[in-house]
Image (cartoon, rainbow, N blue to C red):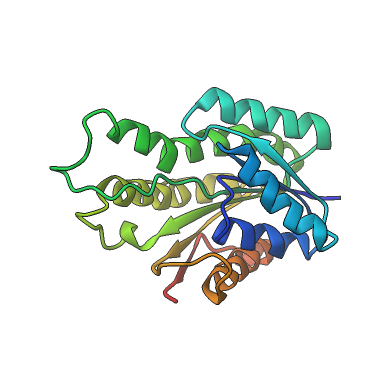
Length: 217
């Protein structure tokens, strides 16, 4: 059974994407800082007959991310799809941003994605297969002064995907991002549509891989 790992799984796009892959026969592992919330989401999937589990992870802590991925590889042998969905959704202008929070926001919004990609890329490259999927945002294209750290983080996610794409493609690993230029509510058709965009990216034949899909709602 193939394994789908979600880092920063929430009730919106994270859950919808995990469910989309579960429908295709993937074992899904949902992880987040709050394990109880991840377990609630996993329970919903189990109730529908899917293979789901929950783990805790601090996306801002590289050691926590690396440890989770190592544990998953030990238990399941391979992570076939990594979905990085973690984000600090802080609303703050440059004047309002707390002095001690900017770096911690970036650690979640883009740093954790880099660490996670590094951690899974080695074994994916050895196998010559795997997908690294990153949840991007429209603020990467049109930054918001009211969500400054999130805007910079989403620009970083997009740059990360674009920067890794060709190098990892040569090793059989597909890096892709969905730039979500819309507000997406849990359980909405938008959440399901974004999940479908991720599935389409993962399902592309190697000769037709693309790095980005833009979802405008």
